[in-house]
Length: 246
Image 1 (cartoon, rainbow, N blue to C red):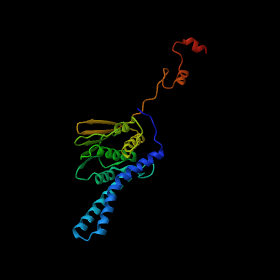
Image 2 (spheres, rainbow, N blue to C red):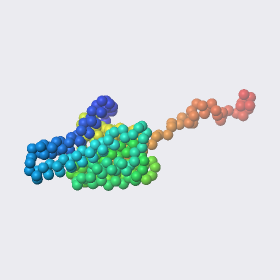
Image 3 (tube, one colour):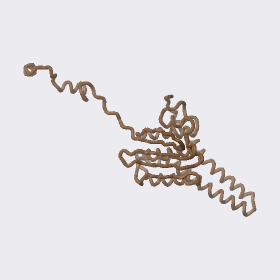
Image 4 (cartoon, helix red, strand yellow):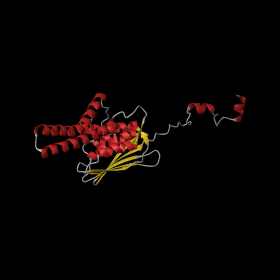
């Protein structure tokens, strides 16, 4: 295991690369469609170009709205986010033909870091099923609540060092936009006082976020209060006469 802290500037650069990676494809398609409209007079080709521009613009908008909530500030410090808004942007991003979203989270206000964590885990789960499948998001009913995001699909698998980055036990620094996604999810989980675990089975990858339970305060041999308790209590071996004489 390699213990490290990524430089803030490097983290910002890699996150920007991650967002640009998601947006550049539909934006490029829009440009291609505009070029076809500029050069073609054929009605069928112009219709194809307009359809391409429309679909690509919708994809770009969906990805930007998702990234704004998953990576952006989304309110001031300590703000809460409606899980209904998170579901909306998630369905906009994963509403394609290949990937389906099973959202088992009630509509409620949640701390923004927990909502950001859910969305980031959805992105990571999607990367585990490039051929498509089902992304299932579940929020437990007990308090404190646990978050579970599961990817189900053919040959579902987290690539490279993503599992280590998610659990805080990487072999090396994150060096790609995909790596920084997992590293950022670990940072968000840490900020939300949660710990991540990863389980991989046949055609299934599960990422669970559980509340980090603080360890109880250390108890000294003289009690919780340590030396102050010792001073407050008489020695059991001291006789009654000695106490009275004092």
